[in-house]
Image 1 (cartoon, rainbow, N blue to C red):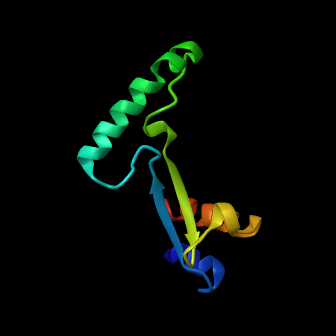
Image 2: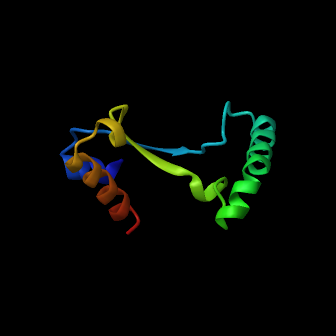
Amino acid sequence: DLMNRKLTGGLENLTIGYEQPYMDNGSLEYTKEGFYERIKAALPQDRHRLSTSVGPHRDDLRFFSDAMDLKKFGSQGQQRTAVLSLKLSEL
C-alpha cells in the first residue's frame, strides 16, 4: 500500500485479497471437505484433459482500490499501477 500511495500521490488505497475458488465459508473443516469433493468430482474430466482443474494453482490475487475491485471496475491505468506497486514492493 505504501508503494501504491507513492505512485498515486496518496489518492488511492490498494488492498490485495487472496481468492480461493474452493473456500466457501472460511471454516477449515468445511474447506477441506469441499476441496476433497471438488477434486473427486473433477477427476474424470481432469484425467481426460491431462490437467488439474482444482487446486491452489487456480487461486487468484484480487486487487482493490478504495474497496473497488480493479478487475471489474478499475481502469487499465489503475490495474497497471496496482501490479507495478506490487512488483516494486518486492525490491
